[in-house]
Length: 374
Ligand SMILES: [Zn+2]
Image (cartoon, rainbow, N blue to C red):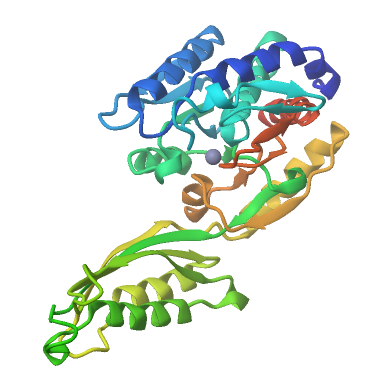
């Protein structure tokens, strides 16, 4: 093996400096100017490492980039995102800091540390002149809002790749994510008829009563044994307590582990009918990300990654998760996808978000080894 954890450990201070620089460039998905500043920083780093940049300007989100390095064989696609769920200003209250083996800061775990890891892994490969496949690094800017713009690019890139490495945070304990649920997002709108709740309630049709029927129905579509959940997470409706409600609505989150369940639940949600005579129900939405199923191509890729990790003295485990990522898109196309390759830590989207510094070093070595050996 030409790469070791000790090689990366010697670069720990520089690696942490890069993590810090990225964390301090705050980049919420919905703030294009802020995200573009972090994009400019990463593009400059990639250029220093000899990348050819393909730039895709965007109107509503940060500009997209593919940084490419030539190599032998079919390409490896690396997926990262620079956007976070944290508004600008979070840093002031939760600045970057290191305490013992843990480092803290908004977006550090999901997934600024992953971006620093990849830059360091690429530096290692290039300084040593180690062979690798063509590397195509897709730098997403709107992953946290469901990748509305980047999805076609991600799918087109995946289709010509031998392997996809998705640098999302791992599961607790550092496990790779070899199965992810698919996510559906729906809005249900109900129209009834307003009436005086005391004088002539019989002339009204309560949209809220109908909503209650719909909530019961939607939740009944859950099937925990199959990993399917339907959650009505936000509701609204009505105007005053003495008025029969004319309008009501609900926002619904669907999680499924298999394609069959995605089809069943989508059809059942979109096909719902009102129970109350005179009420109307309309549903918008659908599956946002398809499920990543633990298919043979993923299991085989995981076993190969595990063998490469062992040569570094690292033990890799795997886990399933209810959360989705851009890896869901690539796995659904049948392309071998290793997800959860990011830095071990805790607290994605949470106040206690943190990474392990020793994990940062180990995972950087693993990433370099995967790129070199695949
Ligand atoms: Zn993420």
